[in-house]
Length: 399
Ligand code: PLP
Picture 1 (cartoon, rainbow, N blue to C red):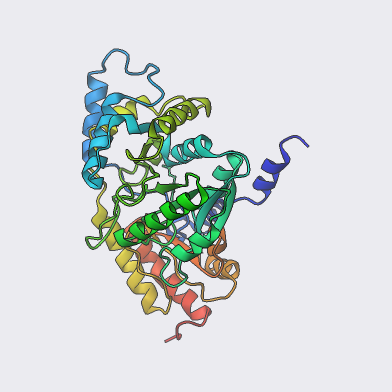
Picture 2 (spheres, rainbow, N blue to C red; picture 1 turned 90 degrees about the vertical axis):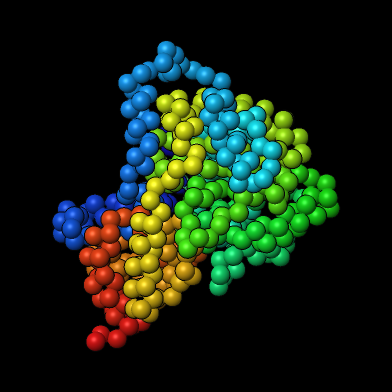
């Protein structure tokens, strides 16, 4: 065998999102770009805010000596300080630069955190439906993922179910709000109840259990919905996030992790995280991007544009008979599959040149995901295909 058996097995079970994306390439060649409706990827179609380009130009026109050199593995003090003061504002807690490490995206941050805290065989609870990569990241660091369903009607936290899954091997719980793929936001009261339960289990089991809050969509919420920060509610909590979605910079790989200033042994955790950022081979987050995002902590892409896309798809799909939770944030819909077999449904959609991801890809068969970070024109052109699909699968009459 030329490569590790585990990696070969992962490649063979290639992710649904990738598979559908490749299928899209084939359909585009056959039918032309205009006639294929690709809702598979969470890759923002809009460009970063104007202030990003202004700052970038400023840097390029007046480069300071040394701006491309190695730096402290945690990142620039200036950037960490800007993030800490933004986090202090949203959490009401005394977050300082020493609790922030700049990383290569939220993915980098998740890997750094998991490597920092996991001993071999320790368990990490993830909430279904879940972001596809969590299981791989947990496995990267010798951990064991434990899946717990969110409430099947609302996709909100099912705290008794999480409590029942906690064992003397549990090291962490990953939550994601606003959520990919469901778009739900966990309200402050849920986070408060979660914190109470986790702290009770920590006392009972005499071990530190971390809540890792994965929040790359924190600035993408609709209808004035707040996205509460985890810090006031869970003592041993860590925020992992990035500017992949809020500033539309996924290709630039810029994100960070931030520890709750009241965390037990917070200094040791930070030392560990800085060491892991280095030894995982990230070394430090991209230098130019750190300089730029330091100035953009109160900016975001045009959220109204995403809200309009949510509204047009949600309204049209529900009118056609699809059922789903109305998302309050992120840029995904997660409707119930009209066919019991979500993979068969996604195959049926493909015949109408509609590319979707089956719920199975998120550990949640019986649903499908629609990523609406796409052009409005494509959404509008896709509506007849949605109608034809609804008629074909029997949820809507032909008239
Ligand atoms: N977490 C969630 C829930 C995501 O949806 C994504 C990307 O789609 C990530 C993490 C990774 O983001 P990044 O590009 O910052 O690594």
